[in-house]
Figure 1 (tube, rainbow, N blue to C red):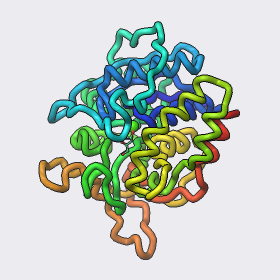
Figure 2 (figure 1 turned 120 degrees about the vertical axis):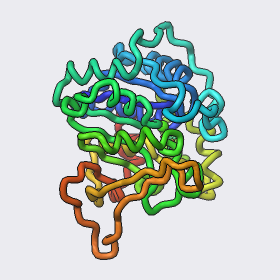
Figure 3 (figure 1 turned 180 degrees about the vertical axis):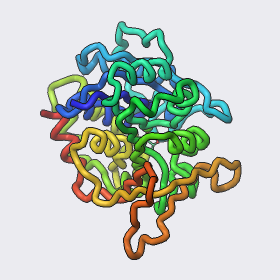
Figure 4 (figure 1 turned 90 degrees about the vertical axis):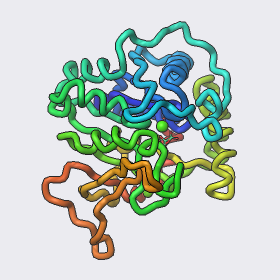
Length: 314
Ligand code: BDR
Ligand code: CA
């Protein structure tokens, strides 16, 4: 299995991604760091510990990461999407464990030594911790096999503003720095994630399971399904973070994922957080640009909703 460090802000779709990663035979989750985004970094760590305990998962270190973003303070989360506690308003049984004494940045750096050359970084929140880790240890990229990050919108509209996707909008400079790192980054933007959804019937399969953890994941999705009525016109949800998790696990290969330069708008204007990818030849097919190490996932043809459910229920 691939050793994975997960950087996250659970978060309803983060929770679904976590459930998938715990169940995937391709992945060994070796550490989790949290960041403010959907909720605060501290609340995200509480949610992660409670979810891991409910899942009966082996002791995976959970470390609290950055509360504030590089250029601005944490703005209070996205309660209208993820519920005020980040997990759809569901009260999770409180786990006895506490977060790791290290920061998420230190945990990531330590794991990069322990799993040198093999560690996969999967970032499904704002990229604040990743940027801090790069600044703290410029040799980090040499020890990381690959980075997969959910974020951005290339040709698709944004979701938090017309131009920007939430993870990048919450910390545009961190995203710019993570993308500029000397490592292979696969960016999974809204262009791909909005095409993958979960149905009410598939949520029902989680709710019908006898394991409390799996049932709770189904319950947590309820609030998120309500939010997405405004986007899809029906109760469903986009599979943002789960798609990034499935790709990091190598379970599915993207149909279209060119290596192209990506610039992040770090201004305070209406384009703030926009990810500007060089797709100028897209009508005839986008070529990989020489020397570019960022892959932009534009299309994943095989539908991942049922794969997620099957893996979690297995
Ligand atoms: C991303 O933002 C968060 O709300 C989700 O958890 C996901 O990581 C989607 O834009
Ligand atoms: Ca997330």
